[in-house]
Amino acid sequence: MRSAVRGLPLKVVIYFNGRPLHVLVARPELKTLPDLRRKVVGFAGYGDSTEFMLRAILRQAGMELEKDVQAFQVSGSGQRLQALLSGKLDAAIVPPPFNFEAESRGFVRLMSAADVFETSVSGLALHADTLKEKPAQVKKMLRALLKAQRFIRSNKNESVRVMAQWLKLEPAIAEASYDIYIKGMSLNGMVPERVLESDIERARKEPQMREPVPVGRVVDFGLLKEALHELGMK
Image 1: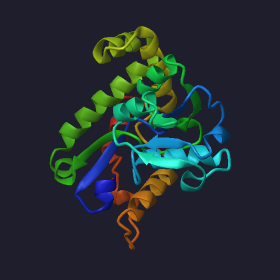
Image 2 (image 1 turned 180 degrees about the vertical axis):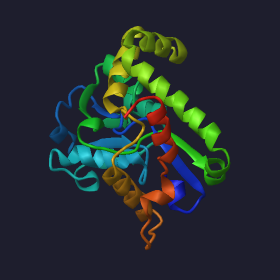
Image 3 (image 1 turned 135 degrees about the vertical axis):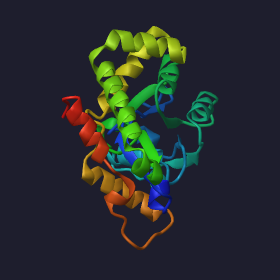
């Protein structure tokens, strides 16, 4: 989306998640959000979605990122986990399964970002020419993705087994990751327009763009709606 907002000829055609999977984990002695005052908290970087997740979480305790905690940018989730485990960070916002590894070592889950923040997290984006010239191919892909999402929602045990095998996770961690994923999953591949507008506005501020960017410039759910209708889904 950020690339499309900046003018690249891309269109998002489906979203897998309407809420983030990330959680904020902290050292064992830090039990509540206020305990983070003046502590070092890691996120992916300014302009990244983790910045806005972290800000939304801190607001629940009346705190601000730069004012009340020491912001520390670490780009990769695995790197943030290692910085947390090594003591360089007091807390970090990370997605599954990294949060589960931290929690298994005694770190505390302070809050799930999904509880306080909506955003268009992950999905499929195409070059505008592909969308225009190969609509049948795009729709087949969308149908396959919708069927996969439907299978995941309806078949927890099998989905957990596949996750554990493919991602090389312990079964318990795979199951916990599944529960977080389901919580943030988009039921029909779309997210509300108000969420898209907020995401676009955040992306527009990064390069300090003055002109507004309509949702239709970066998102096209036309073929998705057709695929939903063909599959009898809403």
